[in-house]
Image 1 (tube, rainbow, N blue to C red):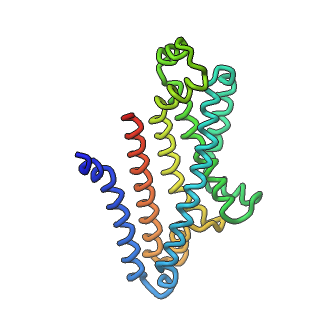
Image 2 (tube, helix red, strand yellow):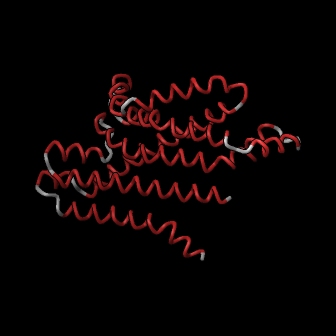
Length: 240
């Protein structure tokens, strides 16, 4: 039963990883011309993969560190009045197109990694903030009141009661933010931050389909892998 569960959980992750490896091998050996062959190499794809993953990882961790405490704060009685204001401000950041955010902060931060990470961080705040707020607010009041009646202090109620019960909802927000980040990170090529967007944009510019397909397929597979891993974590949290 344990082996069956491991295969059920992690089998798709292994499968999609293998698909990414075979996609890389195929297009390295069938680049569609000398120009594309100079771009689609194992070293270059490894570098772009590392750049893409690091951008998503850093921006997502920064968004979690920012949005989860902010969401918790907004559920506290003395801060509830400003909750709607902060959520509306974050909503504005979410409605602005990601390419516009990159262009705006390029003028402030310049080219490179920092601009891309800042834009991705800003773009992923809302799902995590909203789900943190909704998850804690969704904890049954009777459970919280029972803990208060037993003399449990507010910090302990938060860490022992509210956060564990809200964790699946919070993780659902993190899952959404990470998957959105994987796709949006392809635009980081426009500020010189690298990632799979280099292959996609270059493929469009020089009209080489293998370049375009390599970037698109690897980006899609990375999004699916991240989504599945976080779905496993979300399911495990719900079980506990």
